[in-house]
Length: 82
Image: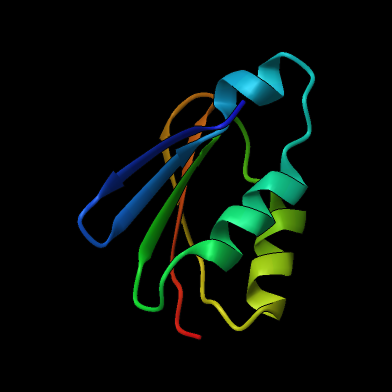
């Protein structure tokens, strides 16, 4: 249900459509991040800021940057360091 694209060392995960359909992909996102190789730049595209997800990723030792690209489209960017 997640739209995942790998471009070299960048992993792009778009969950906007899944969330709009009522799916809550938190566990899928966490598993995808855990499976990513160290040094991977991870972009998560979300329909809202998703502060609980940011808090979870930061508790895993990652720093997150959030940009609002347009209404209902936020990009959360982080790098897997461990």
